[in-house]
Amino acid sequence: MSLQIISAGLLTTIQDTGRNGHQKEGIIVSGAMDALALRIGNLLVGNPENAAALEITLLGPQIYFAAEHIICLTGADLSPEINNNRVKMWRPIRIPKGSLLQFGKPALGCRTYLSISGSFAINPVLGSYATYLRAGLGGLNGIPLQAGDIIPCPGTNATANNLVRAFNPEDNPNSFISASWTITSQLYPKYELKPIIRVMKGPEYNWFKESSQANFWHYAYRVSPQSDRMGYRLDGTLLFLKEKSELLSGAVTFGTVQVPTQGNPIILMADHQTTGGYPGIAQVITADFSTLAQVAPGQNIFFKEASLSEAQELLFRQEQRIAQLKSAINFKLKN
Amino acid sequence: MLNDWSNLTFYPLGDSAIVLHFGDEIAPTIQQQISACAAYLDQNEFAGMREYVPGYTTLTVFYNAWLTSKSGTHDPYDQALQHLQTMLLRIKVDTAPNSKLWKVPVLYGEEFGPDLNFVASHNYLSPEEVISIHTAADYLIYMIGFAPGFPYLGGMSEKIAVPRKTTPRSAVPAGSVGIAGNQTGIYPIPTPGGWQIIGRTPLSLFNPHRDPPVFMRAGDVVRFVPISPAEFADQQALAI
Image (cartoon, rainbow over all chains, first blue to last red; front, top):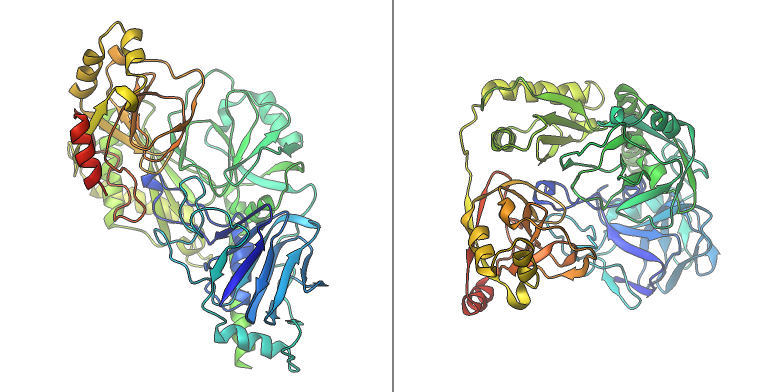
């Protein structure tokens, strides 16, 4: 069984929750930009939450299913269609063999995740399936998917079969079926056009001029078209240090807002380097990574301050909802 | 000195990492303290700890806040902090704990080191003198970063310092040995870069299919050894 890539879309890569444990060797974490969407999608097709899935960016691919599969689409709404019928997201879908999945206009958000029950039959590199574009490893041959690629799949697991059956007593194998049940809308963030991104002050916050500190909180920043999986370059009010200071390189992470000398901030994203030497004015809280990952180039964002304890509390709430989803799935399967 | 932690401060990097900040100077003693802490953490992870990353004067420890908090019942930052404070009471920093010496063979000049002559003329030296100065020192690895397996080396002589190229090369081959300012380094993977390239090593600093993928670690020492084109070819054939 396999997925056949008819056309690749703008940037479609295989990702998981990242290549952890190798940053001290200079090997980046990589993985899904919106890891929350990927985790939920995997749970809804009976996969381990960190399984490999497709990350689809803005303009989606066309994918042919030669055999029957159960999939789930989470994250951005890029107007997905199966055999020219609009399909719902955030729920398991059974796709009959011979179906074509394609995408239309980006309606909301920037990155869709396609989880497939059983995930992919490909080899991990250093414990992860994530595509690491710059080093050319992981995923499928270390590069984005290309037209003509065939991704082998082991096939649907029993959990996903039972899940689809549990929600659809009148199962019709000849047309696609999406579960009538979906997850609570509280579980995933509302992707917005002008999102407010909550951040903690960064280690070098006090190095910045007071006027720059004030401007950072007050004005909108536009995500520039030169943004990618490594980082979002922001256009807006320039930020300056009180005095010229050199920072010695050290670890940076997903969501670090660093400011190179010319004053335009950069938010580091999933493919960020492991270390950096620019002053960090802020650090995005984990609970807002998902919202941030769905911001498209050209959109404006605002920053709002959060304390460490607020950030922790919001992270706990997100993880509690994931835990609830896991028990809801188990409950549904038992009854 | 080595076991004096009075300059050490802790602060959060977001909600899922804690930074140990050892000072503001690049110094071998600080590097030894960082390596000693890293070695302790290799043996003593706390619940939910993900990994650590050494910097020049910092050690950043990443954790899964949900696991470290024991499902939201404890403050994860405090849990990490307590573990690290206990660590300081338990470790004793040696002069060079587990530090390895890596002899890195380099073919200098010609097509593998296209900027050797520039480094020489910029410093009023002959190419042979540049090679002899570059190979005379032992370089301490302060950290690995920028690219997989890229070592940040300290200890290069000012006599061979040279500015970066005004226009970076679009592709520097893997194994290239370069100088930028008073830093020297080795490119593990082909990448765009502005360093002045003086030679190339047949060693593979990064191989994702080897265990470990990167053999150099912060705290190890690098010594460059000049080799001939014939030796380069032999060693390249053996490199994994």
